[in-house]
Image (cartoon, rainbow, N blue to C red; front, side, top):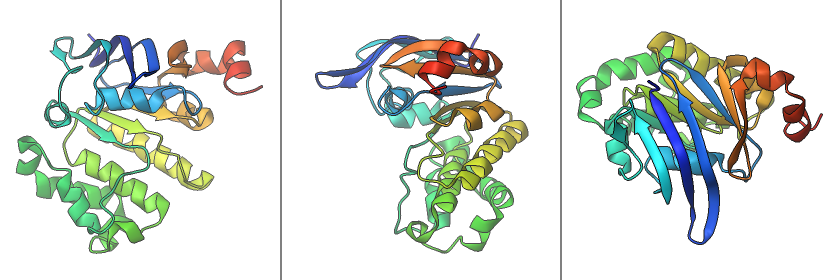
Length: 238
């Protein structure tokens, strides 16, 4: 049974429909890439999974039984799902450490908050050095590290990562992708990552889904997607 499954999901904003019957699954321990160019529904799907947007139809299940389609964000976090949002969405006037502590929302996370903080400093040594610095003064790459570390403070089983490469230089994108691979291996996380950068996503993802106009146009292993002539033409522009 998949850790996270989406069936025939429809969603949008007011009269604007964005997702049209999206179905996908993420099995325990996998890294799955949600691919597509801007405006094709990746972030909308992530918001639905995180409880930030209520779908108009379809089903979201965790462990095959817990329905998340009509659950508020705090209950999604309590169920073991954390989101690293697009654009990082930090509290810019709070310190790095204060941002991380705010990630320890659920009771299970509060019980191990100091242990998780120490794990964050070990994973991101630069953040330990800047723990008292206000988050808004950090570089883009460092802010992305804070956003990832904050999501991990909730001790999730499933990590949703929305567009981690946005606004970052190519060398920093590679570093962030490597960090996600490391965290998955160390913590046994299940990861769903929305990403435009096909090549970087292919480095760590097991499988992928390509969204086109709010629908799943292609899906398969990253090797299959890389070799697909249709994906190369429509998505990679080759």
